[in-house]
Image (cartoon, rainbow, N blue to C red; front, side, top):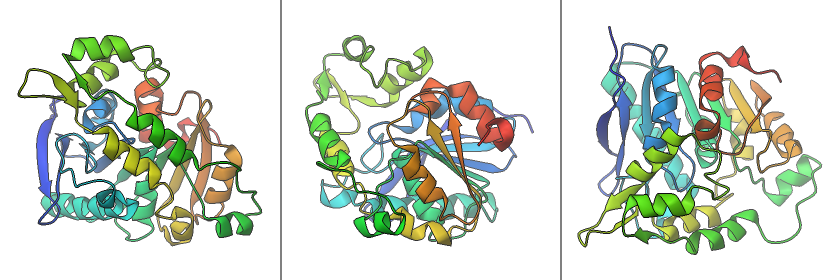
Length: 299
């Protein structure tokens, strides 16, 4: 079967109140499911998805509150367990549709990495999970168990939530927004194509002619503030499939935190990749190579 490098827009009804949207690159290969970082969208995965296509049937989805997915009222609708539940129901529907028993590869960046591992700790639906620079936040009791010292000061999620709320969400057009954001630290090292896809898929047209972020700043902030609302450390021992946690060399989190988590995963492995926190958009080819071949990185 040949494959089409252009994706198909998809919608899945998760429950009576929640619709999840995404992009699907179809072929006859095993399924790879991709989960994005907070504030972004399925569309930014496209360059990486095309590289995976010879090996996987690829689906990238929009978290609730992102892309064209349903947007429950914040903050109540963004406890991380809701994100886990969405992923599990989405996975069940995809598998039923394809007539397969398991998702071959579940890969998530940042928020997507934590939600992926938490889902794998609940249900045995995945053959392999990859966590790309995830924002892990163990409970204080778990930190004591791992002989780690809790960090001082406010929780990181609270600090970054304040930044998210200050984000300008409405612009006269995508070009103006793109020029304003391009040199911001979060986007500075993105490929040009990934950045253009964010402007295309991460913003929507308004009736008044302006454009606005598909993920409202209050939604993004609510998700940041809910960091740790699902303790993935407590679920780590229940994960039945291999898990590769990839630390970005220029990422945001100490390697000791990752070592503590991966020590709890029965088939866990910690690796390091050169690059910043948003690896799929900054190091697209390198990330794709690793997702295709887990031996492409050294521990």
